[in-house]
Image 1: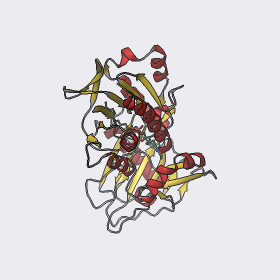
Image 2 (image 1 turned 90 degrees about the vertical axis):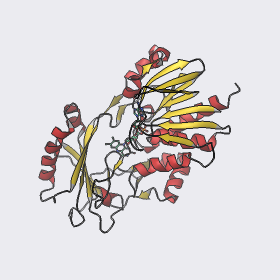
Image 3 (image 1 turned 135 degrees about the horizontal axis):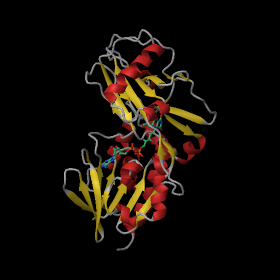
Image 4 (image 1 turned 45 degrees about the vertical axis):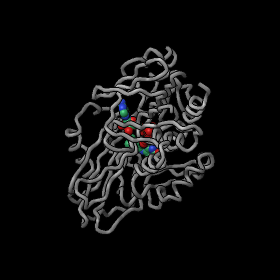
Length: 352
Ligand code: FAD
């Protein structure tokens, strides 16, 4: 049985694993590795240290579907809506530029529930499901005949017949071993053109009796150089549960994120909080606060000339995908996963 490794348990990797499991006619062994301790990647949902508050989405906030993507990704939207993973956005997002042909959706259980849904769909009771491993940090890829030897940070390695890389492009380019030898000069050039925005995100977790009296569920801020977006996260997700305190999410502006990119989170947190108190005077005291630096937040310039994926080598197969090969949102990741699926299907079902 062929062994396929998908690196990254974000949306692209998880959906790719799910679609492979559903659509591949031949049996393959699929593993998904992520260096983090949980699934989601940039669709991450943080649990508070104290369980008396709601969780908070530190990365992706809501899903906006254009009419064209609503049609072309109809089956995935229907699946997520009927499973209750997605719900229409009901609350007011102040400053959101509404377009007639778009629909906004929220995730009552947090954006990571979309990723977890596809991971659970990629799993199965028989041997054809994907095996998921966290805290597996890939550091190098070495070609060994018709296989890839994939090295982990811990020092050990495993062999696979096909490898799919879904992490941000700068992290792909950091991999040691043979990747650099197999990338053509043109491909190297294409990958180096990718540009990401950077920003910080803060989640504030409040006690059950805290009241956040604002008329919106989220707001785009235009008159503050530090803060770009604030959301009463639990309310935005239609998920306010009695007995649990609200959670508030703050995203900095991209210029602020870029300017302070090398600062420690501990030093940046008080600056953001000071600006937040100017925006929302009288904010109650949170129980806990979490700060996240998104070095690779959203793709500003995607990989040119490679819609969906880049095939580095056909045999043994090495493919790169992720939002850098399309655009930074749900549909961009779906496009990339679908495009990698066709390459994987062709390769794994080809006669030896
Ligand atoms: P990622 O989510 O980055 O997944 C890559 C995974 O690879 C990660 O889990 C990482 O841990 C893992 N990894 C990296 N290196 C290694 C390694 N060496 N070994 C093993 N694992 C590794 N999208 C929307 O649709 N709506 C929004 O409102 C929205 N807002 C956003 C706000 C912010 C602040 C951010 C950061 C993103 C936002 N996005 C939004 C974009 C969306 O989150 C991304 O487009 C999407 O999550 C990208 O998914 P991915 O699977 O391609 O990559």
